[in-house]
Image (cartoon, rainbow, N blue to C red):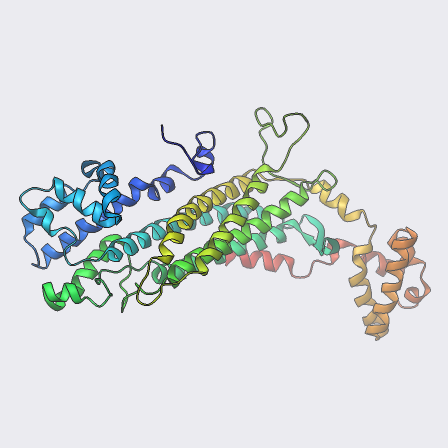
Length: 453
């Protein structure tokens, strides 16, 4: 048995990182089969355009299976050639009959194969992420509607700010994921483009062999992969791959922000939210039986950090001149890892949202802990309306708020005793303005905008 070097390839952990579909897509076997598919599609396109005999394309297609070619054979040849595509071509040629193997990779360059199949994997990955994002949104929108009236303390800088509702918070999460779906839709045709244009991207080899109809050959090959056709060679540029990685980084940023919020809200002294927990089977400590750690959210935070790190690495590289090898070493390591990490992160995020426990009673309890202090803003604004002195009103309410906090006197009680306020406000007006449910602005409209938008 071969040694497993990467953490998520350990037998103990492999089921926890990425679906089988995603792992197969980016596996050695999956990638080599995609390279074979490229050679098959190229031969088919050339045959359709009369560039090579139909029976040649038929034989290349018939033998276009990585299991027939043999990964071990490719590995052996690579040991002497030190060029992966040549190793594939020679092993592939060896199993083709009647000289058909001579036409494999006809006129092509390695980068035609590598860039186009990488774009294909990215396309399939983005489509998977998009499907996961759609599922996440479909869970969050009903959650936002359900808790649209669940009043809680809005937090800024780790401190109570003004009242919000949990439904409002969830709607902000949902909108972020909706925008990521839009980003994917906008980026797909730009990122998922290929190349079948020869060594320097100007079709010189293909044109010499086949004439100007080689442009149609490129169109046919890329269409088979579901890729867009670039107006000019994309080989010297890797912005599309950087954009893919940065897009992953943006999604990871959203997931980590939400996971971190849930971790905070699951603290024992807060306990407003809980990620799902399998009470019967799940163990969170080898020594402390009471622990219910937010392990899913903590894992999401870790995955997000790795994804952003990989995106940074991708953004630091470029092709010198028309092409060099430097970016490939980064792409070959960072992109498969990122695909698995993204797949894992989005699946775990969906699991968290589906099983999220919401403790409304603790939201209200925590809201009431400062005994009205977070209602200082509406009080100041009402006083400014009544008195006609905005700055003076702010100064008065600030003084009252600080004194109430430092003297540990309940804010509502302290406010009612202040002559500066009673000069302008009745007791009932003070009671009404200090009611958190009366200071939610356009919360309901904003939630509806997200749900219906």
